[in-house]
Length: 175
Image (cartoon, rainbow, N blue to C red; front, side, top):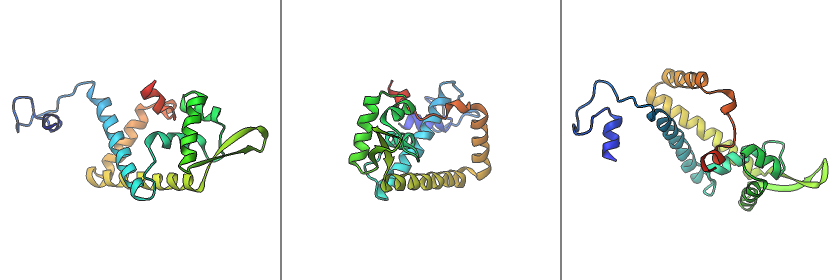
């Protein structure tokens, strides 16, 4: 662990405390740093959500709640949006229903189908998540500087295709 911290500070192996004039720029490091940044933001958000009345929410549930959306969705639609089977989506919906984040109701347009909708608790966790993400971003801006955070976001927008903004991240990591 100390070795990784030393490498992040630009120190070379075998020379503790000696800073390199330039950090080692290995290609594999960029995706790891991006993922570590993502992970640190999400972990911080979930610690905050736990303290604000949502101790059982998990990152995968956030993707699922987004897949449900404002208008609700069927389990099949949720599965397609998440890139998982209808059965896997159904299990997630079952868990979210048990935790009080969603409810299943008759589809007003097709009585044979069930629609999954956000409950008041589901909307509350999404609102608190948005507030939490704003707080985390503000902390990054405080530490790094608002201009640097805006530049980083702009650079990422330039490099990341619009098609990358999808909800099937959990399936992508596990599938």
